[in-house]
Length: 112
Image (tube, rainbow, N blue to C red):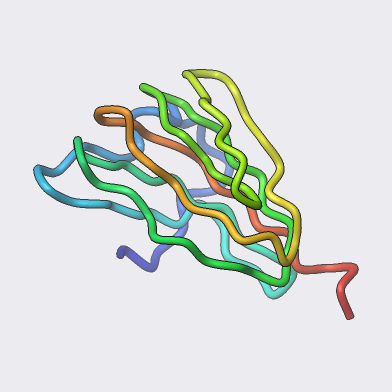
């Protein structure tokens, strides 16, 4: 994972920030702050994320392709342009439906 943020005060085409790499999940940080972070991710066919639970709300938006996001055992198929909020403390996992790219925004403030 690359640790540098995107250049500020410059326009970016979000879907082009990150490339697909065979048999890999790639993560690039857009912003990282103590109150939360924004990452763009690419998933090759067959790649996903295992079930996890986080103490923070997470906004997930598909920017290329489609994926199934399972929250509390309920599957949600998201296609390009669609998004969902994963509630804090909810078990969730991301299943691929072919290659896809997504933006994940984690909000940490308000949980003190």
